[in-house]
Length: 562
Image (cartoon, rainbow, N blue to C red; front, top):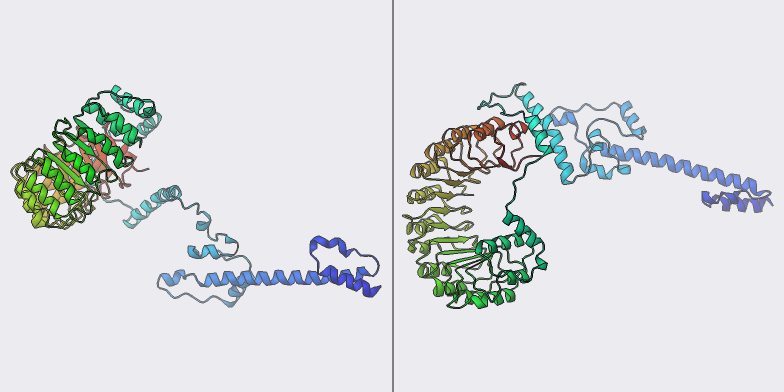
């Protein structure tokens, strides 16, 4: 009986705790079962002890990987006393103190954050990140003021809010006024929202057709049925505008343009945006047969070849007054030569985003002598000599010049081109990073009292002094100015704009100009009665003191910080 009970006890020791009922065996099995329980208890106690030691060793290894705070400051860290080390090793809880390396947090036993800062970490999505940045902004400002001795530097501009900005902010939150739409705008939105119910538009005026096409493209509803509604085959069209053709296939566009491709066609303006999918060699042949075509715009036409453009220019070049081609990577100098030789009546020419066009390819444009607007935006390889040759032929009548994105142009070449154009009123130099204060001074002196629109986005070498000279030279006529991402600008240039250009300024872009202040922007805005649009993306230093304190109730501020 005792031998049998011992066997039962051994079997009971090898079973799980969930089968404890088997330990209550009869007779001599009780003694054997007791021995099994003791063995199981010893195993469990040993496991807990080893697990605690393993956890302590793991935490100690993590602590050893952390940089010592004194060592980071350049001082030698004092060795820990043996008693403290022993206490740390014997404790299963990590010691409070220095911050953990966040890279090790995921490897910590249990995955628990150790420091208070880590415990406060939330979801790392965009809204949580933005919220964390906002929470830290006040602390960063206080730290900055402490570095300056507790006193902020005196402001360059003295300005006080014209309204109680806290009350104005509350009023704006309660009722944000919106402009009343026109009856035509309401009707256009209603028709486009229910475009699937429209069977026929009949004859439309060009303005209505443009409005409908633009709204349909904005809603991404411009497809083959809508194209047939706006350009029915039985009605003569004088203009066809489609700002976004990415949902139109080449067969649908071919069927729409084929009735218009004849000598008797009245179509004078054709504008197709994002038309790379649908404009092919066959489409260019149809365009070449349109007898009254005077204005042609093909943006994003990546399937066009030199031969396509040569065919259009050869057939319609003498009558074309406006030509815009953009977004093509396979056009070469040959297509520029065909434009220069065939389109001698052009008044507006835009060759944009042709990123692989050779730098010297633009020179033949100098043969055109009637250009009033010329754009090489995004032609990154354009060199100074080729640009000057292209501008030279029409310099006497050129009114608008766009060199945005032509990054290799020299400052001297840009200034020389502006000096050669006595009628120039609009100039865009976005991204011309070589532009200097001296070159802008030459441009301002040459176009004194005539320049109405100027864009200097990402002209990173400019300073306040250059804008001060520009404002003094163009005072009273400068209406549109972009200083986007010119990092060295501060309140000094705003003071100059207030003194010389406040009466004429209509739109101003100060995005990413981090040195301008509430006082500088507020003083300029209050003094500019015609200012309608102010863009301040990235200007997180501006506060409600300006946003709600300026006196212009109907000013549209774009890019206001959260």
